[in-house]
Image (cartoon, rainbow, N blue to C red; front, side, top):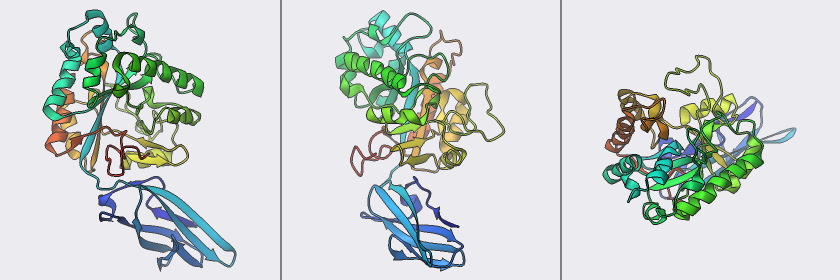
Length: 371
């Protein structure tokens, strides 16, 4: 056996994981080896105690290769991993909202003087005014509940969308709310075509500045063969539940540990993401992540407790648009209260609003485009 036991391949590390200076993050790399021989890590000698070895190793770049080499009478055996340094990390949160189509349906029908005369966008604007919250609205192309699609959104609000694009952005989610799991067994070409269809309309009625690459696909299920097409379209993050998912307001989840709603990631990956929230996959250059709180699934008190309990520098918040609308069959009268509770709790704890797409999870210390 010859393994690096810490950190994990694809880990995102920051000042909580080692000693940080302006130029490096020094972490303790550990491993196990049950064979005799010489062990080097990045060409440096390690401390070896029985089967265990360790070394304090400085990370100096956003992407860092850690190479452990065992040399014995039979040659050299190498284990290589890649980890990310979240340099100068700070307290921050991201908020995305899935399944958006109702507010655009209403705007197209009612033609309000301002976008923010619409009750849904008015609430989001208040959250931005009071807390600075940035929102990503993931869009459906079709409204499954009435005859409407994005081609029917007028262009007369393009300037107002552009004026608010610093905090209000839109992206692709799916063709429509139903059927469930639309991309679980779908060819990559279909996902690409659906993505481009929505992107074309966002550009048309809101402008390029209002677009941000997708971070959450509808039902978080697509086969790895589709990741290349998503990457071409700027996707660098994919959010899901990965293990023991909770998919409805009356769903308590399975007692057995099962992988689902998570892009077919294996159980090892899913369990790691559950505990650590983030895992970078070097095969696809995509960071898989799990949010901390989906507002439509929890009560106000549960949300406050969940957001208060986070002990990381990052908090992922999410919800679904339709629960804000009285005409929806699962309407939640306190949905806005749930959302504001999550935002207010994060804000009171010192977390700042960001878009996780930029930099490393909203931290632009290495620049705006890192992943």
